[in-house]
Length: 179
Image 1 (cartoon, rainbow, N blue to C red):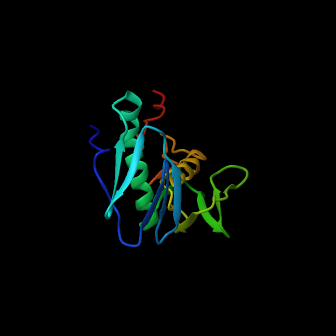
Image 2 (cartoon, one colour):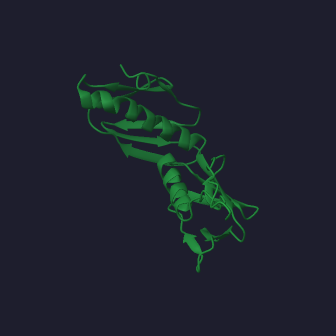
Image 3 (spheres, rainbow, N blue to C red):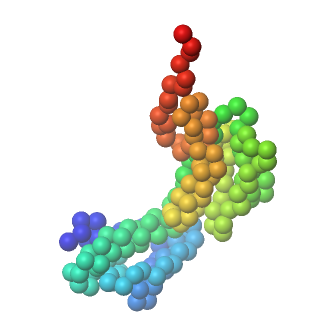
């Protein structure tokens, strides 16, 4: 039995779950999320918890058991608290700003890099170098943060670029001087 899959998911107050076969919809104070789960697992609500069970002991059902439990748990956490990813920009002249809903980054290119957020995602910039991506869907928040980081990943010689908050970049020595 999957250690993750067999744990029940507690429902906080003001969060409601509606289950229709493989389709699950979660509604809370921050918004509403819905997803169709793969076959091989079943979801049931028992009181103030949600339980995910697998239909058989086949290999695919065992693989999907923990996955589906985590997906449902992320939906519940997203509509009740939300998710956020923090990014730091390091480098001379590198900065970020929000114009309307669009995030504009100056990263040393000949043009500014712009990101239009999808529905349900918002950007917050603090001090021109700290960007926070916030939303209720963990998958979308992580993908947008990864795309922002990929626009100028941190380089190993000077450490310039966009990195996650707390990310450690291994530095290289560079060329040694002539003797």
